[in-house]
Length: 293
Image (cartoon, rainbow, N blue to C red; front, side, top):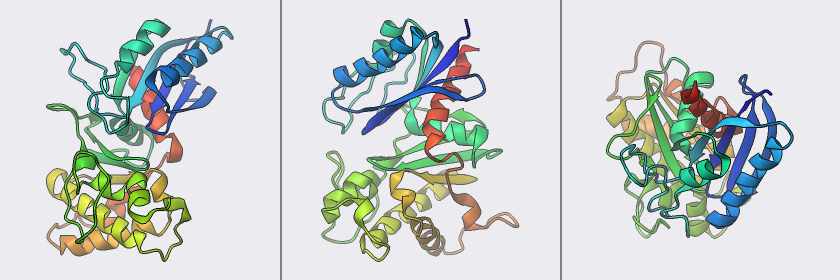
């Protein structure tokens, strides 16, 4: 019997689940709304059980998950979601729940670290020594891959909670920090600030000025701290085509010529869109299963 790989992109809005071949071909797929942990994870488990009955059994699962996560291998809570802004999802042992029910290895990583790994392997960050993947959607997060390896550290990068200066009388929606990037520039934040969703803004809406200002400051700090070869901007909010050029222009102004780029490298070579589109997260989850081999 052919064995396949399971890939789960676990987000705050939906869980994207797939069964994939060794060649990254999607054999079966479903999207499950993120409701309560019990309901959502139960439906994920049911998807894999039902497909196993159809001879689409997976030998392992890669889980690219929203967080924060406990990724300390020596921790009793390894593979758990920790203190997350997502209501009812704090302290959920998501890896163990999946592993115990599916009886296969589950390899867990942050959603953004996994997406950065996928972009490094197959997307717009190939050959990049230092790659940052930023998703701007329901939340805002950043993953870091250096020389092909996702970076953790004390815990793992939580770039979305980087503090940025903001205009007076602008208040973010993060329950932990009033002026972090996620609380000011995520899709949730845009809805909080402007009382409508980003999809409803035309290109002249003042929301894009604030959005590009926050993202440019965010990228400025990344440039100064990490000196990345690539900063990939993905997620639903980046669907507004004018936004990436606004960010590039504001970033170039804020850098003020301080960084001397290598010959032939432009700001548009560093700040780029995702090369894998909506598949960055799912392919990132698939990439995690390589640890089984």
